[in-house]
Image 1 (cartoon, rainbow, N blue to C red):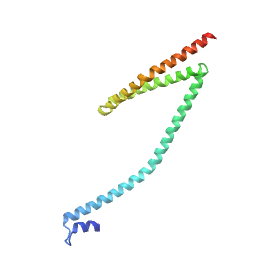
Image 2 (spheres, rainbow, N blue to C red):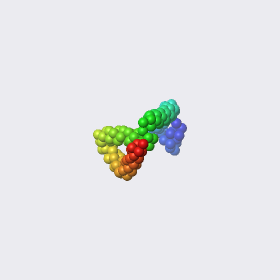
Image 3 (spheres, rainbow, N blue to C red):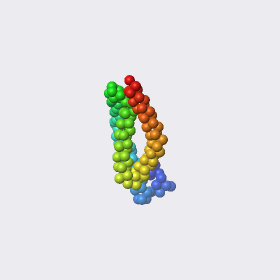
Image 4 (tube, one colour):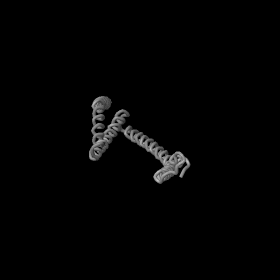
Length: 156
């Protein structure tokens, strides 16, 4: 039993009662266990921190790889389409993939129940509001570029 616990429970020179001694001993055991858990957690977190940093770096490499693959696909499309039309086509492909994957994700969130279903509804509302502003402008730009490409092709 610690001296501080004995001093608290001993009071004014009286012998500590059994309940006071038990409480002090339990408190000391709890303190020792907390110190042990803290040490254990710190030992576990240090390697996890290194692991998380490595995973974050790997994620960065995936993003760079996807960018390189996208640039390669764009160059391939540019061999038989004008640059702007190739860019629009690749962008359209990405948008279609995002819509398909997004819908699948929202379906999964709704199937999970209350909290995730609410989140899915909020996300869908936000995406719908944004898309209602962006899609018409993007479609008009693609149409305009396609018409310009078609007229250039007929003129030659």
